[in-house]
Image (cartoon, rainbow, N blue to C red; front, top):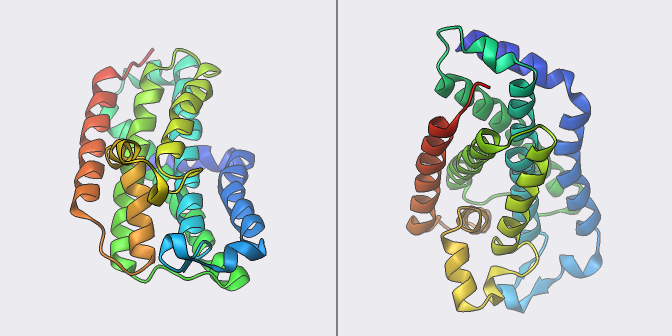
Length: 244
């Protein structure tokens, strides 16, 4: 497992333009949108909180993780399958679960770097609040990221070609961004849509990030949904995984 992680990390680092885009896009959006004066004012609709203190950083964190889960991760694995890398690996004792776990760990590490930069630069440049419930924030980030990356493994398992993988990922990504409150804040969603959001994995992830950023403990329901998402998507990915 250590050697597999080492080799896969080197291969990811060689694709540095993709890594720069994945890390840089949410950061650029955070700094760009955060510089809008109105977003730095307290909003009564959000309980007097400033948009740049919880809503915007949580949204950019979600965007960073979804980009990895729905675009980067599937493209890598499907390209491996097209190039015959997975077929050759199938002749070794490496089980598919170990390869998928290595991809999940590496992409989780990339997401961690992205979110660290979001938190630090948001605080230094914009004066945005840092997560007030830090242990809860770390737990939510790791759990939610792992669940969404497991969904990315499902996409990688069913995508027929490397070119189709990003398209399938986009079909999954944008609805998840919508129900997570990227365009319509969860606070003003209709009740029916909020119920859908609560069980979408992305919705509980985004809301739990906001809660811990504001100093509140994550809701048990949201943690349960993220754990269920990790187990279900991870199991499906292993079940559907194809070497060729």
